[in-house]
Image 1 (cartoon, rainbow over the protein chains, first blue to last red):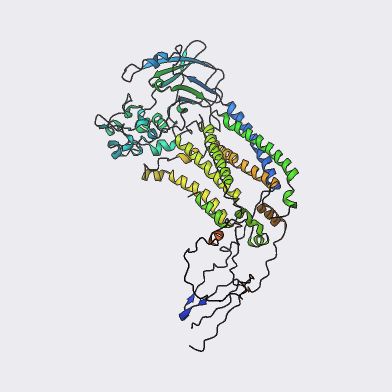
Image 2: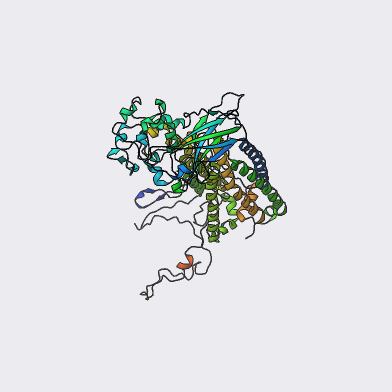
Length: 367
Length: 273
């Protein structure tokens, strides 16, 4: 007969059962620690009227002033937009938009007069905007070679497969490769102020400082040491749709090649089909004189970029800037709306609590 | 990675009320048995909530980024910044919703929630750093995005707005339901706040050898398979050879339908061995 002994189980300890042969078996009962028995010290919040109602009122009271601030700031930003695609027959750029071909050597120019109702102070930013242009198409976004753009010599001569079919042309590698680079915006915009006594004054436009610092100094880099770019790009060819090769984009050596800021700005693909990209900056002269006086202006366009084929539109935007960016009334309106709805909801909840709130306290806990 | 751990912590450590209160009010287990938490209605409610949240999490950043630029005039409405904005809003909303759903805040919960938010920002900044880009150029093309977009007050205001728009309806609906139709869980939690802990059940040496596991979450599954097993559908159809019954049970308490009482057995050495 077996000799086995049992010891009485007590609530809090391990039991050891001695089996046949005397070997001790551990029990499978979990240890009685706070962690394993779920007795950790804890905080147990519940939604009471005392926390929820003040929270709603406070959020309402915070959001409404923020919304008003945002809305007022946005309204104070001066913005002027002009569409120069030339869709209408009466538009100055109508002719340029019609007879367009890639092979024409004579660039088409048009000039559009406009007037500014108010003077613009501080730095004025000049943007070009495109509509119905899907820079967020997946295959388009992937069509680039970041190591080539970083100045990697191997990738310069052997662009990555993602760039296909814009990787090679006439058996030479394309630099920069890919569809994004190939479709770079190449209109030239110039601004003239029409003096009251009739002369046209060219407004100086600054082309540097328009791209992100990290893009210009880390992400994009010219191959080699960047001094003799024509030699470095020897053996490559320009993208199919470009008029000039990449090492002739600007005479300034710090803005030439892959680190040309217009190119960098274009390569940062936009998220939405209607977008604007920074083109030039009109720096402020000094605190006394407004940067752009009110009056008549002329926009001279060298019309190179065809958009009519996909029903796209081109526009030029002049805008001042504030701490919240460009003119965007949405955030201001949204904050005011949410703040008021929140406040109203707080009042409604207060009424509901007043009428029904005692059920929690007095009700028995029944089955 | 960022969202799995807090939810895991929630499922492991959350409690309605602690074990002593659960013993006091066994009605806490009835919602589980009545399948109130996993019904079709609950599922539809969940789906509506997630549809609403996803619309908010896309269209609020969309409207805020439409034709916008940074505070120094440069681009912010680009593909990468937009993606980062949507993702950050999502993380904040998910963690806040989790905080709302946790009724039992232990140190582990706190660590996981704050830790996951911190890990998100740490990993994002690492992935978008110069070093990673220079080493693995094609895998980390988002270089610089975090630095350039997350320093804009515009972006943080948008994140704040989407979080509040997703969370406030949930809080309002829960509060209204708490006032109008409090569930058993809510009533017990309310009592917990007001009254002291009930006395522990008197501790006596158990006459029965039943396992007394302490309960955590007041949750029990819907009715199990007892009905199926006792319906005799598993019994063999052909008759068995009749065997002599091992133990005549006509006089045992079981046959007489009374509760059984076990007594502790101490065996003596068998003198015949």
